[in-house]
Length: 473
RNA sequence: GGCCCGUUCGUCUAUCGGUUAGGACACCAGGUUUUCAACCUGGGAAGAGGGGUUCGACUCCCCUACGGGCUGCCA
Image (cartoon, rainbow, N blue to C red; front, side, top):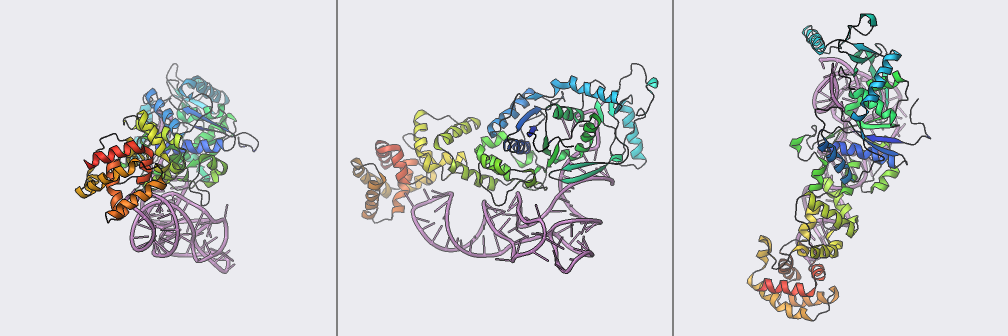
């Protein structure tokens, strides 16, 4: 029965409509499809549902591809345009006509609207339009009049969706009307196009938002009408905003690319999104490769999940710490571009890379990493921010001044530097913390920085002495 | 309105009839400390409500409440 017999390779797809950027919910749907297929040696396909010519734009398609690429979700083969396949859709509609599982309906939109109004006036709240043409003799068809092709859906009985996430869902057929599969202008509707495309593309598992759960019943009728194998259904819950309401603009970021611009690393984003609505025991922090090994449709929850930026940040912090220095620097540069911030100079890149081991342990996002890494980015004279300036009082400046000669000939390692600084602190009758504050201010112009030794090691002796001298002046 | 889906700590979730209902994020207290981050220890925190079924329900069934989705010649 099912298209996905055990031995058959898995084929999943992500099928967004190009009417805007890649939504965070769509990103997660794509991620689940990707994880499922990749974890099983299957294929992950991408199809753009652009049959709505009014609302589809090439810019949106580009934005979606860009979003997926940033998230690190690679697809197999070429991107399929649903619109480009319209002839095949029409062909199937006519085949349904030939098989007697569909019929030409000459009712006009105005007539249908009038019917609905009349029914509502009568108190019928859910008017199911029954076309008078369903069983009409073709001889009675008006000549040359425009018509749509409607599916001849079963009037009685029920359609059962065996959903991997939602379980067994039963829909009474009498609540479903004869949906239109081909519009009067000859273009296919979504309901027909998805089924034909999924079938032709060999999709074995349809993993999508649960806003499609009801649609699945109608689509299954098309599979049945064509005698095609029904794919495995998995309707995943939508993502909600922190307030539990449907995610919308007022919740802030809804587009994937905004997350890149906010400085979240893609690996952390993937981890967080994977755990949003899916779980495998106590597994919290993991790579995508690890997730693929254990990802299953059974692990997906049935309730909508809320976005929690605190947890997103925490997860991202782990991934930044786990990343390799060079890769992290590369991704950070991508963030800089996405956030329209100035690119790094060669010197900044060099120093940042050197500082990365200590920086990545204390940052959850790229902006935070940059803030902590200001000492590596800054050039002389270092401009202290308000807090740092406060640490550079007259007394402190004097101490910094007395420090520079002692640094002149010291070997540049933490082992030698540490006793020197401790000694200076002792000589001035202050704790090391009191000395570290002005040092941080002089070296980084900030009050929150990596260890003073780490900073000195990264920028080197000459730059250290120069910055101390600047600050002491 | 009708149909469909959902409901475990504030949040993400584990549990697949028998647990002191576990973990993570967040929060609070303490510790470590060179600021920040991290880290360590401890703490508070949950089965929407009501009926059943059962020796025993978070788990199975029904009702209610609340939330969401669908109800287009949109996808």
